[in-house]
Image (cartoon, rainbow, N blue to C red; front, side, top):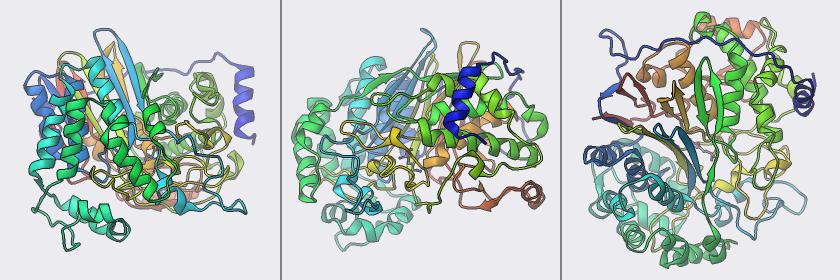
Amino acid sequence: MAHPRHRLAAALLGATTLLLSTVTLAVAQPIIEGERFHPAVGTHGMVATSNTLATQVAHDVLAQGGNAVDAAVTAGFALAVTQPQSGNIGGGGFMLISDEKSGKVIAIDYREKAPQGASETMFQDEHGNVIADASRYTANASGVPGTVAGLALALDKYGTLSLAQALAPAITLAENGFAVPQLFSDNISQARERLTQWEATRKTFFKSDGSVYQPGEVFKQPELAATLKRIAEQGPREFYEGKTAQLLIAEMKRHGGIMTLNDLNAYQPALREPVHGSYRGYDVYSMSPPSSGGAHIVQILNMLEGDDIGALGFNSAATIHLMSEAMKRAYADRSQYLGDTDFVNVPLAAITSKAYAHSLRAQFDMQHATPSSEIAPGQVAPYESDQTTHFSVADDQGLAVSNTYTLNFSYGSGITVDGAGFLMNNEMDDFSAKPGVPNAYGLIGGAANKIEPGKRMLSSMSPTIVKHDGKNFLITGSPGGSRIITTTLQVIMNVIDHRMNIQAAVSVPRVHDQWSPEEIRIEQGISPDTINLLEAMGHTVVTKEAMGASQSIVIENGTFYGGADPRRSTSAAMGL
Ligand code: DON
């Protein structure tokens, strides 16, 4: 079997024009009594986030006449207060905005950047061995944060609210506090040991005796409230140039970090062209590099389009086999080609072409699994506990927003900026610390994703908007590290191929194959018979904890349907 580079080159040279057959299916969203899953319903808009309070404040914005971008930015800042494990101002992410009226879909890239002092080998010891903790739990684990600039840019371009208005609910939640949900308490308990070693983190997120806030207890964040107020009064550059910037750099320096005020001053978000593909007559828009998400969702869909997945059946052995074969080929390519296009050439057009997908599909053996070693060599790494968060918003003016942002791990590096009350990301671990050595998600990267000053680390975050006949149809995305791509893919397949309503589509069991480690990872709920059939084809099947948390929306015939992922107990979709 050829190495991925050769396979792609061959497909490019041989550029066959053979197009895969496409079938357009009607999707039935209307609520049918007796179904086991029911989406939230609205006639004027929908908000779906992973946190009830964030959903509520964003819903209020829509109800008061704000548009989807106003509501999304409000949710983004609120999550930074109510869900500190992943909601953030010390991290970064991606936002897709679809404006039906102009027909444009734009992507805002507010991914973190490596500081100027960063270097290719900064996480290696003198023998060239990777020191994993250095890219995860230190001041140097942090990239230059992009969230404040990114959310402000979205508001500036498409919103109607002022930044101060969009920040107001977050400031109130930080100042007055909120009753913590069980999930908040459980998550912080699990991370307690690693978090309390940082003085400012202990002071900010734990009670004065060092104990954890219990469900129902009120948690206030006065320092974060003051930071958000400074940004509201002075604008987004305050974070990069003002008192917040000084506090941030002081914290980094206190712990031996290389980030400087110049790094913060220089940070700018970027407007990108989203990746565009089609699937059975639907238009799929998803995040372009420095995310790998869009490229590989489109690539996998292209490989699956020629088979009648709906007829093969939801989570049948035949369907999972096809998905696994397609997924591992995509992840092999990811390891080779994907990186920040401001620094490296990514053969995006080739990876997302129907012709290339067709050549890959031709390699599948319907009876036998292709060993990962025949696709390309790989190594295994343990999974880390993790959190990121996705939210989706749509209004009745034709605007839809799909946003995924993160600190990388839950609570990022664990370091809180003293005096400013927010956690810093540990996104530097998403670079390849050394070619061939996997990161925390078991993902392997090559030269395309090596560390360079000012470069953005490769991501899997996949905010996605699917359109049908020029109208916003499905707004989706998920957290889940390397599983983001396959989780988002399955929500699309569940709606288009399996004709599920959106609440069912985000709830049902998921599968995942990332080429290395060599296994199909499944959630509970796939029958032993199916597993036996997959094992007979040569697949290794392992059941592990749940994957992703997709907060999604479908719009059909002017009605908005929201799906809140039950994998997170605080998820909430609310229509109006
Ligand atoms: O950008 C990425 O791909 C990762 N930093 C995302 C991490 C993540 O999703 C953790 N989540 N559950």
